[in-house]
Image 1 (cartoon, rainbow, N blue to C red):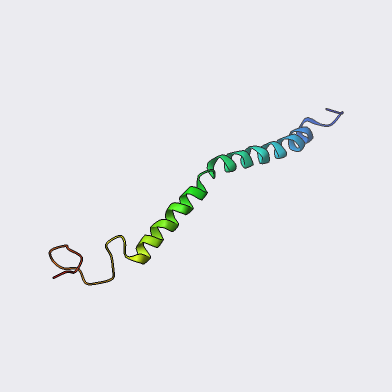
Image 2: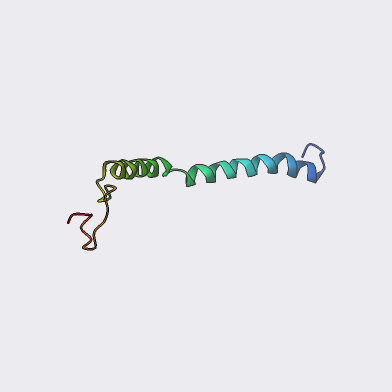
Length: 68
């Protein structure tokens, strides 16, 4: 190509091609990250509010969350 050695052409074309492929794979794999963050935030909010059954109290042997 334009009288350049084959190795030079491979480097000039190959490195940007690899970078573009890497970027496309990253974008494809990271599509659901926002949904995962929302789910994680909701789970943390439930935990902070005690909605998951763990209110910080002592648990009883009956497994009823510490109620006697």
